[in-house]
Length: 569
Image 1: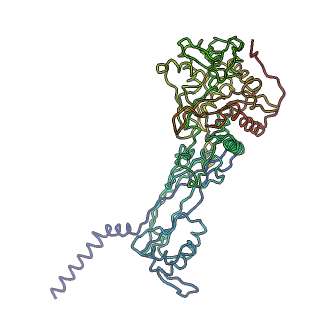
Image 2: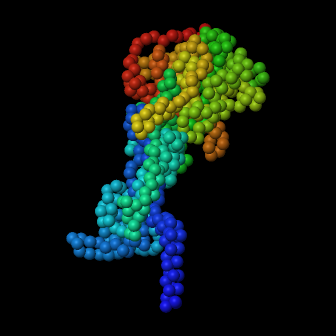
């Protein structure tokens, strides 16, 4: 009897220890085993064009996973009759839905994993079909997949996201923080078979969706720019090229067309080296388009007027014995500053440049944006090359006057002409217009205040001289019937990417329209065309794209007469 009593006392003590002393601790441990936690993905914001059309969006998808310790316990019941059990039965009903063989799926359902993925990125309808069978241990995680409904249109600008959903190129990369939002989390209590206990412990922090990013791009104009530059590449034999349209008043990029644009939804069909925007990452010597800066500097500092007279040979020897040549042989010509600009004479430009101190030449190149990133909003932007005066050799000090010895990206080149068209005010180029929060709140994208580069008088004078380039000079193929057009041709030597020899050319035309009240600055750049001159290969593309842009913006033709200057004396 004493022995039995001792056993009962010991059992009672053990029970007291478990229930009273260790009870809370054991209960907490049991609860912890029943708790399942996870992340609630934040919806990624859309990327829209200026008109609100969707360029990138996120489609709802599900990752289906299985608790392999629970699937074998499932019973497939039809009309209250068990028609199958366990892994084989689950595989038999799920395989047709998931598009796999039952034997393959059955093999995947064997093991001890509590959360093995058996399908990823399935459509909502697919998950609902799976869910309808109420298979023990089968659950899903909601996720999303990035979709690009317009294919290659603006593909290099939009960019893409990687497998983890992080922006990895274009706007997707630069504005990833705004687009991605903040993920949420959940923690729920589950029963023996893995199902959530409705009255059990739960904790949930909702995800905060990302913002939409509205671009400055006009969808129709973007399509036109891409189509025109792609056609020009085929016609001229160029390796690649760009066609850019910007609003001269605001700096907003209305179109940025590139050749061989990628489809962000199908990167496997493109070369990774083309995934970014070469309009900002690749640089070139601007050539004669940089003469706009030389003329603006000379006029602003008062060393010449548009009618100042020069005798212009086809070869000119500078004060330090450097020989500068024009693109073709010609007798000595009596030309005004306006004439030198219209005919794109290197020897005349250098004579004008001799009147401008070296540091002043540098200062104006810098003021117009050379040597610094524009901040347009695309990753990988190059600042170009503008060496300090101390590094200019005896040749470079003259070459910079006609766009050699310096390099720019295509946005920087466009910015120069937009500045002239905007009365000498340089507005920051930008590709994003505004952010739109999930509740509809709109936050404008912040850009720098415009900076005055030259006086309005100087800008208007250069603009008038640019009109002569189209009406009487090397840019006649840029003309648009019914509109006044101003611009400048550019042809610059480039190194052969295979041999390093300077036997390749970059041809360009930059201009503005309408010249009497500028709305857009348009730049066309073609790398390594078979015909080298910008006035021949790039100017017609400018005319095509600009005519479309003016009509798209509702700019009416007019018959006003331009201000002209004599070209000869």
